[in-house]
Image (cartoon, rainbow, N blue to C red; front, side, top):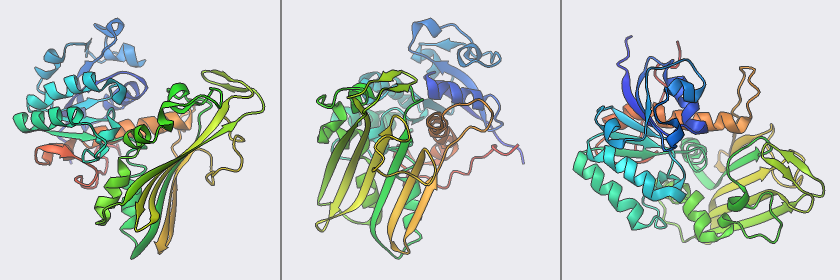
Length: 359
């Protein structure tokens, strides 16, 4: 069976973008036609040089106009987090207005655009650009994203009754190089108040799938609540980013809880540690570094998913999860192309089987 390759532009060559580009150039299902960067030091370089692979013939640019002019089937956007919302919106709306669909991992509150915590100035420009260009915009992630929307929703479809559903991220951050100090307070004194400890910010940043699951299950939540806990290390702990010193926070645990009829029925939980022995009384998986779904229902279901590299590279499980996140956005392109214009969520997508992955 021949595969009609989708022509894609990738914006963003951070950890995720670089790994995805390395997969695209090997795939029969996609053709890399453009790469966008925001770092001026990368402009003019071959994408292969940026990503540490053989030359691709695709030269990185910071010109949105030049990339739009390539008329790709989709922009696959791995830009920065919602902290840089204005820049993300600037790039994405340019493609959407030109009739080019967008799949992205950047703005995780857009996993469920209907979430009331999404400010109008984040939603309206995308809505208008989709209408103008007759285009679609899909945002995904891992958590928030497929680990706590696709996984639990699929398993709930195997139940007659669900009393509660919990989706948990249980990760060791020792080798993780992403941002967590100011956001989560890891590596900071216990008196430090991290950004995500503020309930409204935590719900907006991480909680989009709670009202999504409620909507999919046909209920309206009474409230969304949060909890936040810290664990202080008694010893120094080395990490990929330096040392978490004794007396500082080396593990955090938070939950976002959807309340219905006076009880918590949907829970998202994070336990992020520096070292597998940190916070020993907090939840762990049956294996290290897993995403877990627990359904109390008829029947009750437990599912654990682990992401690993088995290529001998020694890359951490958290990095493998980052690659899976990026590929979810890429592999959704054909389905997003086939959907009506407007916002796209996990509830709108068909099964994404990974066309071209077996070769």
